[in-house]
Length: 404
Image (cartoon, rainbow, N blue to C red; front, side):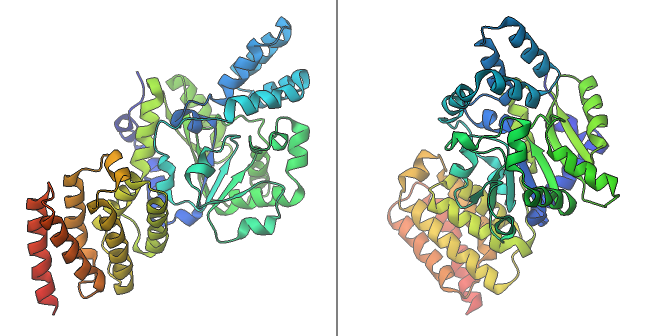
């Protein structure tokens, strides 16, 4: 039986970690770096985990002794060494297998981490799920100028290369040395020194070079933020063992025993989504919602707007921005936009969204007047939710009269 989110929250030290992450996401997403591993892509799609991929490669090797060694390395959690050994055996054919295995994917779930609004995402994944789904992020790799990585933009850093360029894929210690030049080493060290890093879907194989950067901070006794990892384990004993190992590197784990289909992993990611946001981060959130609407991801747009509508927006300029965004969204959903229908955003949800958002409009703005017209339009078209809309319109009319 897997570990539920309620079970995690019942342990005070784990609850403290979970709430610390959740509060950072809500109020300081620019201080958060998401470090995404293959387990995340596997959960979202039909792609294998890195361990599953390497096991599959071992099964295709004719040399039984070599295959046995690879499996023993994988069992010991030394995936990086197993990958290097496979690369020595298979050469470029391993790159071809990577391209075949990770080049095409089919998403089966929403990319929940988009709601975290982290300005930096570092991923060791070869697939393109993150950059395709979060296409407002700029994509970088270790070969780019380090100064570019400090631009105030949303960034995905492809730490181990990308399947779109198999030659860029990092598989061995020597290829690490080529990919991680001195400037990039400094960038990663600075990341662990100044940001909270949240590992998601990673195995945290200690042969990964990034552990050296954390040890550098420890060696010189440099203070740095706490780091966290949502880590799949096979048992409570393994959770305790991994917890002690990673605590030496300043990484606090949130361990969970997976259920079938990793449903509880999704529950943890859902719980971390902020329900109320720091008003000072409103511009970032509005930008994200705008991108969701632009890309016709209305289910995420609806979720984000719902969270915003439940927050208190007190600055008039922010209220006007929120109102303009709501009008743009409502015009789409009340005009029967097919993508909205296909994503099953119900009439009741739309009505509740309008009702909860009214107080965050600037009541003297054009957008508030346009809201009244949209409600009129919906009523005239005999909208299935016309009774709820009529009640909301009455409330809007009363507010408008008081504002004049």
